Image 1 (tube, rainbow, N blue to C red):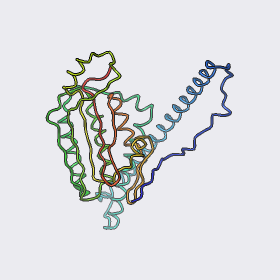
Image 2: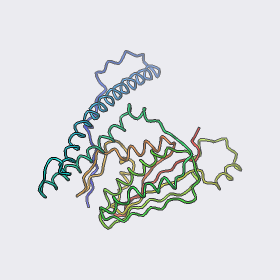
Image 3: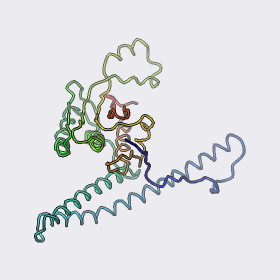
Image 4: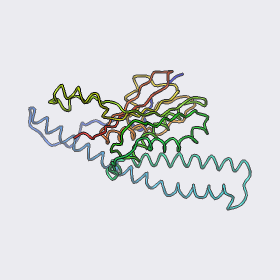
Length: 296
């Protein structure tokens, strides 16, 4: 089965030639000043685009809500009866409205201005109950597509501080991605376990004996979402987390390429890390780790 790598957006790039950069002196200090000026200009341009994108996307919400409202009224036959063919057409419209609403939500969340207004609300939380809620929420969705859903909440992960809603969004984004690429009859699973995250380099001065003692105790939780889809070639394992990128596959409707990016951003906001383990034809396993104690 062929797989194409797709990056949404123009992606044409822009040359830095002809910019209004101030004259700088020769030598390392001059080049440093020029780089700072270029970085500042690019950051300002990025901020302007983010604000413009947020405004444009937000303007789509009102007309979409109106369309969805009238479609629901027609489906409930509050405005008169409809034929079977009309009802099916309305259901298709409603389904695509939900899809569009989801895309709008992801775009809004991804804009820098919106993200800055959504700080983490980390509280001492039970990962087990968090995943139980995910299981209850996603079981009907998996059943509707005919996918076997296995969810094993962890029993031995201690309570630790994290943003419950944001972590559930990470898992939901990974499940949405898994469901998209898993055919009927396949399996999607969620598991979690305590683990030791060896983050050497951060505390180089720690004594060897202390490191040995700490290595015996878990210091993070690892969550894994596994599917039996077509798998992902190793050369795409990093790119799929970049914004507006997706893997185009026959028979699968590609999204806007933000689900995995948002998952990555939320995990990294918790000072965690996320990655994928996969080979073509062997399904995929998306993993992320959250530290029990945030890094200082």
